Length: 423
Image (cartoon, rainbow, N blue to C red; front, side, top):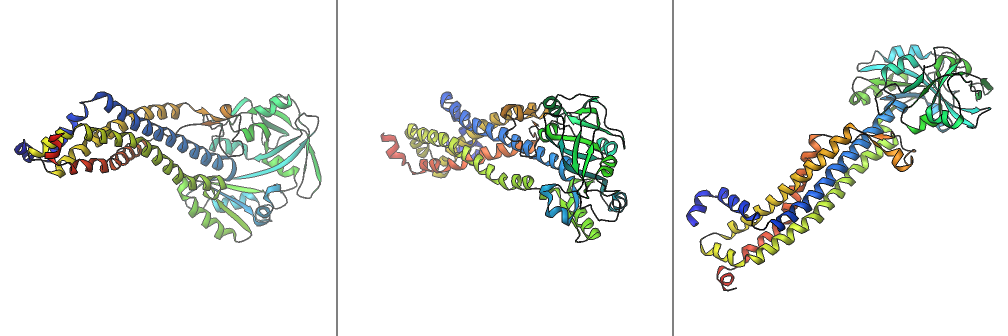
């Protein structure tokens, strides 16, 4: 045996270890299950967290900042009140600004947006948010419905340019009892601080699958809203979309240099919720490691029991010429095999779950009653599925479980052959 081991080297030790793990199937399956469950949860939770992060990123980009947003410094100071009296670069039209910004390399599109509050009359819903958009261009450039990747219109048509028309969210329509063809009277405050009244006709109902817009927003054509708010050709903000979101920082710097200190240019990565999710990601990794460490204790106990039960066998190995290092390697390789097979099972099962829910969304709002409505996150979350998540989870499972079994494996090296054979 000594000659065979020396001839086979590590390969022979691996072969012996592989055969040994099947000598007690029940014990081996327990170890597989422990590591497999831990890795399964790592895959599922990693995919879910990636999906939530993607949803927040997309929501911020589509509804709030684009890839880069430009507002005036005065607006930024009072942004919580949604003031309309501080247009971007006062004295210049938004079309002139957009034309200059489009010349920056990497810029795909520039859109004007106005967001202000409205008080509704003759309605059970008393307050709403007026959202002025360049509707034709915006709807062709963005997928406002997060679930089906469409413009979100489920009934009727979008308001025509300059027309006294509007579109409302489906939740808003249900709460207020309004339908297509009805008129919705409201008042708002203009840039000159005067009350302005409008009674647009509802031409469309949308479902963006984003509760904030679906229950609060009234979409009107931006030209109509500019006239109502006495903004002429000014706009409250400009949102910029890049060819690649990774170019946003460079584009933001170029726009800031172009417009100067009177304007505030915001990169989408600076959004509060985007930054929060980026900061808490390492915390989730620590939680995953705790899962694995707990699961590894079963393998540790198993290796200790194996060594105790096979004392005579260890003594025999020593008498036949195996060195202490080789005996340690046999038990360590057994631990690696148990961790690797268990982790593989967890990866396969978790990967199937992640792939299914990357195609069919989890409706978080329906499950939790829109508890997360304050977060810029869609009602429907698609889990993130990628080979990186699966490979990382498998490696974490094997490495952590194996390292934690190294110490009990070393215990076998201190068993004296003669004493072991006497037991």
